[in-house]
Image 1 (cartoon, rainbow, N blue to C red):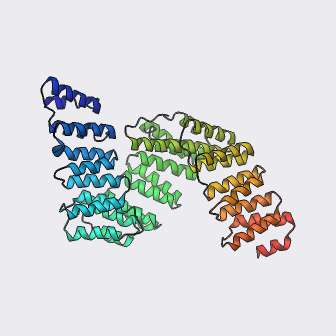
Image 2: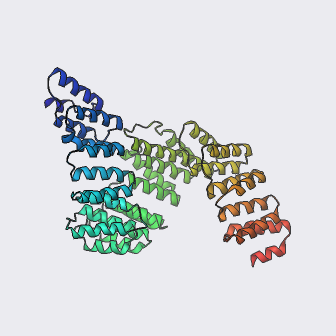
Image 3: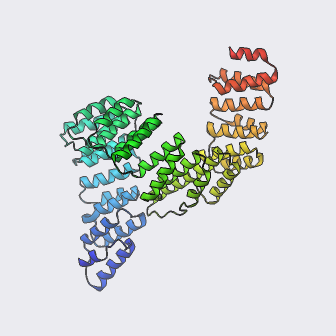
Amino acid sequence: MKWSYCYLSPGVSFVRCLQIFSVISITKKIPITPKSYWYSSSTFSDSMNYPNSEVLHAKLIKNGCVGIRGNHLLNLYAKSQNLEKAHKMFEEIPQTDVFSWTVLISGFARIGLSADVLGLFTKMQDQGVCPNQFTLSIVLKSCSSNVNDSRIGKGIHGWILRNGVDLDAVLNNSILDYYVKCRCFGYAEKLFGLMAEKDTVSWNIMMSSYLQIGDMQKSVDLFRQLPGKDAASWNTMIDGLMRNGCERVALELLYKMVAAGPAFNKLTFSIALVLASSLSVLGLGKQIHTQVLKVGVLDDGFVRNSLIDMYCKCGEMEKASVIFKHLPRESSMMNSEESCDDAVVESVSWSSMVSGYVQNGGFEDALKTFSSMICSQVEVDKFTLTSVVSACASAGVLELGRQVHGYIQKIGHGLDVFLGSSIIDMYVKCGSLNDAWLIFNQAKDRNVVLWTSMISGCALHGQGREAVRLFELMINEGITPNEVSFVGVLTACSHAGCLKKAANISD
């Protein structure tokens, strides 16, 4: 067994580990025992991918260890999100226990298949296997994805109470979080009041619930009562206040956090930078940047993006560009899930730079950055596309605008009302009203934003009577005009000399 310990060091890859085991088995006449496989699966469960799971599976079958170590392999398949193989492995295990069921359920829960989770949970009980607290927590979390129907979660809560399950802090928090996510705030308040054991997670969930419904006073009162405020508690309050439009109060709380002493974590830095952005306080942003460098968290994608966004919104595009240019261009992540997250973070970085240039009048730089983004094969979202279309409109470059529009069609991005209205606005400002009409007529879902873009476009091109006709048609279709709609149609009336019509619209 010494060999099992010897070769399972962090620097040895999974495949290399199996190769070593095989060589030892042949040359040293030492069999690969079930315990050896336990070390293998435990060591590599966090970084296992699907092909490696199959290698271990084959070795287990060959050495007759499936029945003994099947749960560990099931865990590998579930973590690598190969649910078909996980389910097959589950069926091969001679005696499934609560661990087997929980691993399989967690695999389906991880990718949001709540119906399958509930089906397995029911089947588990039908076969006489009693779920533990961890199983119940996973099922409740999965149920919270269906926020429109709270009956299932309430039923599980009732089952827990009827069967006398020990309500530890983790399970209590799962129930509490479920009620908050389903907006059953009365149930959440009652449960919180009855909880004998409350940890900081419990308090944070309740504070978040009050912030969610905009009850600032209750959330602040609860925060003051919290006995041991950790970084997560401060983060919850500062972020919640900021999202509810209380930026100045959030800023005061941030300074109190500094005075109180809890060390900033990565999320704290991100929240603080967003706060500096929303208040356009460049000095605060620079202070936070200094601390980010001092603590050494600039490698975190979210912190980095928050820094870029802060400098963009404060008009410091050169500083934003310096941070952006030092971004890692290749993912070093081990598993596909983390690589996907890393790709999203990189996409946000590019999007922030494009929109930052547009907001600060650097339309040419915005278009160059967008071109580089495409060449780098970074995924482009609708937010970026809207920013690029706006850059084309502001720069008045019709041909480039058409190319961007063509690119949008090529990649199959649907034109929602915001992207559609941006393209209409681009064609209008670039002098091509016919193209604007084409987009408007093709739009399936026309809201007030889309109608207003077309009305303003007609007014800008001297087609006042057409703008008035569109305005009346919009009202006939039951769409309530906004202030911009009125400005557009009144401008059109003025240009067309329809003073009586303008007076009627004003009334």
